[in-house]
Length: 230
Image (cartoon, rainbow, N blue to C red; front, side, top):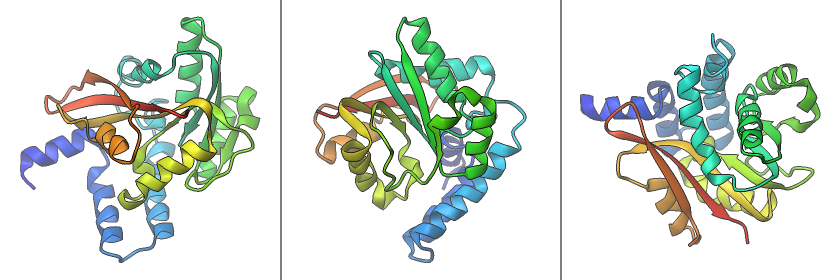
């Protein structure tokens, strides 16, 4: 990989150097899917729990203002009031941000979260005790919640590449409420390449929509992609 290619990958995922070898080991068949989840969790959990800012504890290395600009793109996919589930909710900051951003738009959005790390789920509950009964500790891959949600936000990186279509299909069929939306993002993608939207369309969804913003790295753009559950 060239230095330029590596700089783009690091801009897209600051943990690239630690996470890429785990993906490669899984693709070679050296580890199982459970081992993949365990190794990814070990990297992510350590980084998030040792974070020095609340946005770093939710996977964002920038400032609070940059969080607002970057993660705020998710609101392009939220077009009304309803319930919002954050898959991989970490310390709960995105739950709280979406609730606030929605309120500023005169919407009523009730946040929920699911987090594979019990320690991060406990942290989110301690930070937002008013929502402690809405935050579950579970692996969202194959999870069956006690209810379904109008808006469900996830990331494709939460499962190995070869399982992503199944993961999305399972969320749409079992977690998103009829008439609701599955939101994928925010994502860091190569500039001019709508790879995630293309994947969703190739998996059979024709109603995929997308919003994009510039990234600090000139070779990268921020995207949010969503589809309707009809």
